[in-house]
Length: 373
Image 1 (cartoon, one colour):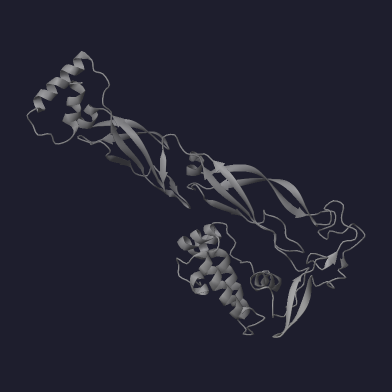
Image 2 (cartoon, rainbow, N blue to C red):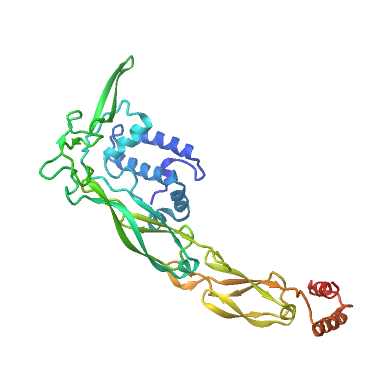
């Protein structure tokens, strides 16, 4: 599997300007109108995939961490912007270089065009992200018009060839300069690049060939997802044109914060409050976890901010629910606000017993403050 940074000839910390500059240079070298080598077309498409990925912050971060396989698993398209044919190749090349000095490859303006991917932001609860859930959502996407079957023409009629471009979808201008003739190829202003004109457009879709429809989907969210996780639903985006592939729906998850729990990867963190006697003598107490109430052993002599752990009580691993993270409890020793007469007598006795000993912890000092305030 090729490395996108090596394809463009840039370092892994390259800036967007450096990536764009490298792409310009390599695109000139491998554009199929310039390079007649058998593998030039494939190399140019490979350049497109690398450029599109590294210029998108989200795609680049995913690629850097997980590679091309990770892009697919995250729901990103890895086909690249140039895989639909040479119409796409010329479009991107002209956007960089103005189309000067290159002959136009024969393209079919009515060739299949892939539909656009759609994005849906979905907010879920903390527990839903941990254990998984099925959500029902409504989306609006483009579907092929059922009245004209995607032609855009009214029933009984059909699109006509554009008289301005002769059906190519492109027009050209030749400029004479001291250096010779230069030709610039641009999109036909009459037909907008389709090569066709609808004199009798379909009344349902207004000649677009596609109409917007609302659809209800059930999205299965696996256990272990986190804030920013993406789920790809193939074929739920906008439909293509002229038989092109339907785009995908990319669901981006946003997880609500929990009142008590904090998540770090697959581990859960929360605070647990205990008293001075529990800290000194140890205890077994009930604590809240993702699975409900569980028992936590407090070892004798535990200190403030000590971390205690319940193994396997954290978040299920994504894709492997048999394995879970841990629940970590941060110990907070609570200083009593007031003492009964009996409690104060007992604490005074304990203080007298320990007053000549060197304190091995902050416990004695804290108790002294309690008794003499």
